[in-house]
Length: 501
Image (tube, rainbow, N blue to C red; front, top):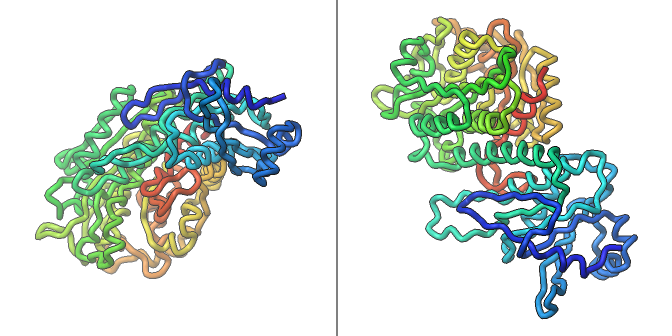
């Protein structure tokens, strides 16, 4: 029988916080001096334990999924008390790995604002349809992501979230391996969040590229194409977008070659700031968010970090075209005709439809130079997508049903959900130009014609486009996300890369 005295006995844990890092340890022994115990309980366990049952009835605690109850329990010496958080699991027979990660996020948020900085998490009473290793890893994943903060520009950097987590667990190779995998994934998500949260005067093409160079330490191959290299490659669409800025464009290519199979290619839009160009964005609340218009590139770099850090047995190449869309005497104009890398000419109808121009050159370059077995791009591309499905889903476009099914499954597994939207050749007349091969915008179906435009720069390779407009930023703390950059796409693309056949 579980006794309150055992709670006090467990609360002897400790681990040291280091700067902004989140520390996770796991062992079968109790850590020393943790200030809080989080105990997972199901409704059945409440009923089976008289002490917990009495406490829960007094506080109307039902142990439903995500329900919490906090109290102070006596600890030896009995003049002291320890914080205890009961965390309800709901029906454990129906618990999924993602729901387990939400429990970790709930634990972190329940302790935010308290004095809790180091917690001992005990899930030993819980039996789930999946392994204990998966349960513990997902719990730590949720605590880690929900504890994220971006405080780089605050003069007062007082920590208000959990920084250290000790998991009470059997030290099996499976547990250690799975925790290491999800810790690598968390790092990738947090890298993408950091990049998305950075202001435009800190992250621009050159500094983003410098950040990418850090992946060489993990064994990834990193190539940076500067303006001269872009000109030599003939990437006229990317160059046109970046022409108006004093900060020259770049294209970053990161490859993790963990297998000899033909690579998967992921391409991320990297407009580090988007004024709209001469089709200037005029709404203040809209333009101030345009520091996040590189969230697609951030998601790709975060994915590459996650794969490299866990030494994933996959071959993936990430391509990130980077530019600032600015206004100057050198900026491209509405009505201009530019030539993309594949030789197609494009009439510029709207300079604020610039992301697809970066992606067009990057998609063509990735296909021609890496011969991937599939290409997926991710981008904050259109307001029309937000009007269609809001932030509930990311928009998914493509013609290859097998590839779209793989992405949908990956999205369901990690709950970065996708909704397939139409992309049909019957829309092609909307992209027909009187003076060039293509217009850069359609006349009605904004999100779909944007995807169809991108399709023109991929030949025979299975291709999918993911529109994350509305998903890249969060206005509050929800699920695994915190306010600000979400890192949306890192978990999805990592899951897809690890599971794609």
